[in-house]
Amino acid sequence: MSLKTINIEPLSKNYTDLSGYTIRLFENIYFEIEPGKITTLLAPKGTGKSTILKMIAGIDENSKKSVGKRICIPTKPSSFPWLSVRENLAFNLKKVDDDNLEKTIKFVGLEGYEDHFPNNGSVGFRFRISLARAIFNNPELILIDESISTLPLKRKMEFYSLLRKVTTEKGIPIIYSTSLVSEAIRLSDKIILIDQLPSKIVSEKTILIDEETRVDDKIAFNISDYFTEEEISILSNRII
Image 1 (cartoon, rainbow, N blue to C red):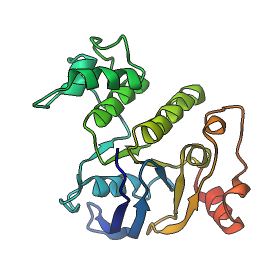
Image 2 (spheres, one colour; image 1 turned 90 degrees about the vertical axis):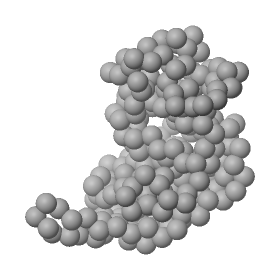
Image 3 (cartoon, rainbow, N blue to C red; image 1 turned 60 degrees about the vertical axis):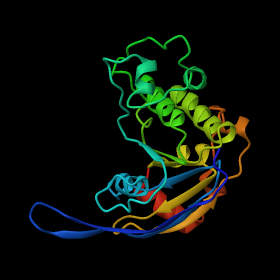
Image 4 (cartoon, helix red, strand yellow; image 1 turned 45 degrees about the vertical axis):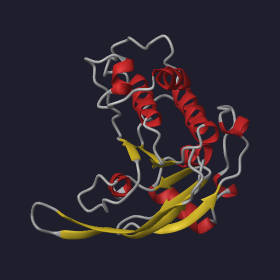
């Protein structure tokens, strides 16, 4: 369990296309990640959210290499279809705690599938494996890049509940990225609202909702309860 606040130092990046034209992708993106909390980057598509996550995770070419153990689950979560669920989690590890491995598999809802070979056509199954692998590696931070955005609402609600459990029971902080306002409100402890190019932080919002309400799909959230009129203008014009 991580009990320390993680400070994301200012991030900026330019993008140059094949013609040589350079644009400022984002600038001066910095914020704090509180222990055991979900922080969501809410921004329009095409504003560099994936690149921001990669830089924070230390896997972008411009990343600082001195970051701690941070694991990023990409937009399309992956697994090795020729390996069982158990083997996927233990892949590339020199030493495996079998008891912890079994507990992690159960935690993400894959109990009974330990020896199952995953079908890479199932986004939900692959995400459970990716999340389990991340948890099993005991990181200081998990980053998730809209990995469940294509799932139907009922399935999303299952994963919202699971991600909340990762933070509340495991104490592992999460950075989640999305373009969906309702998803950000329902899932987050804090929302970082980011405007279009060059992307910059507009505001930070603390979201105080009890856990039962968060995972109740019959409850809809009023955007005006969480955002100012100016922010709603940004949201209504540029974000779903």
